[in-house]
Length: 112
Figure 1 (cartoon, rainbow, N blue to C red):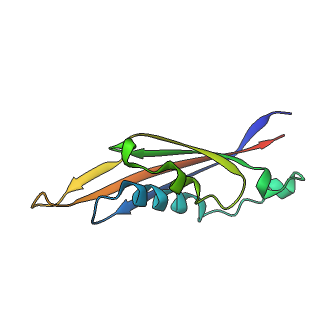
Figure 2: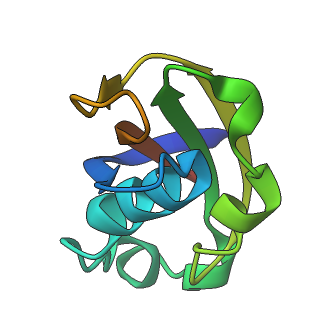
């Protein structure tokens, strides 16, 4: 058998004040996951824990994201996190703070 893509989930997350890249990334992944109820695993005789999830996060400064904290959001299965340049950073007028916007994509695969 081989891993087959069974779902693509996308989401957006922000940290309005504080410029916390990990917080924005976690919120983006939660947004992607919490709008879905994947029943495909049980439909094909698998468990939700059989899922493999590839998480892709886009933020302006990828090195500031704690991948382990993002991965901890996954409620089932195993996963990997890749962080790439993307998203937005919007400074406040005083230049003392910033809003971070992150995008997330979660590719769900099952061994079929």
